[in-house]
Length: 441
Image 1 (cartoon, helix red, strand yellow):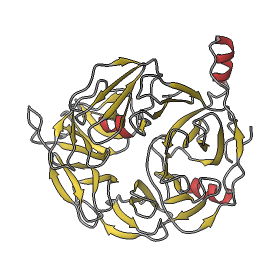
Image 2: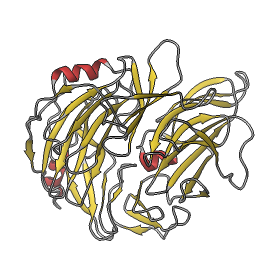
Image 3: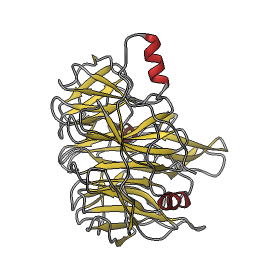
């Protein structure tokens, strides 16, 4: 079935902003200026239902194996959106109002390998954007039937991270694609991306900021590489940032090296943090590492004098990112707070794979391949792992809507969703519709 595509002029603008993207799947945010995409015609699609017979089921699955789900955003058990990412690098936004029994395509275009982000604030207002590209926000006020675009800053600007607490207030962390690297600068909008205020460089060198996350209008946190085990928090909407010491593990913190610290909000006053230490590099004969980028966590290491570039996954990738990497980062320490960062506790999850979602500050769900577990103390302890028969979840895709209802996307290669209406006792598999991959010129 032919899917609608976005305005060609807008697509070429995105293509021109491609500057070596990181991952095709992730959750990030966007912004700003004025160009209207003519109302996008909507195609109505009904997905084939999975069947028990192996022959017909195999045909149905092979018909949709040319794309994967990269982002899931549900507002209720019946209403939600997903982003489908094709092998060509294009995307399509799909919408359902009947719990996944039927789907409409609403927006499509090229990602050029960039990570994507989709967020709806209610059934009318939502945004779609790319990370690692020129700041460009797609915004809808009619549930996705039509979209406008707003471009911000300069063509050389590259978005490292986006964060919005509502449809009006947002932040973007931006670097410049120049020959000489410059520190990332933080920008804030209070008018849905029509204008942006330069808040300056949030951290001073040698520390480096990679990601911004706001949980409330005034309160935000940074992901950073730094010289110590501390996090950066703002209590004035990003105008200033303070170092927040993190609780040491039983063995204490290393006394040297570079620390990677990522803090991300869960629900309410909840936070989850990952701390990874890399020993200092002593010439080219020692063993150590230097953090280069995030996400994913890219480290330049010298193992016995030979340089290597490693791409790692972390606990926070498990929580809110995706399967970016081939191996877990070494010596990770996971911490959680249920009081906005005043106190921290060490946490452990049932497995390094799977997906985590949050019902409230203390009630966490973990779902793995065929299994599920819950924590009622913010990740410190977990119930026994229960069998569920579900497929392997895409990390970061688990959305817990209430005590009974939740959604998640399957890990690749098949575009499948799973949903529950009874607190995870039973799950229903939803196979997304077959779509033709028509690469954007």
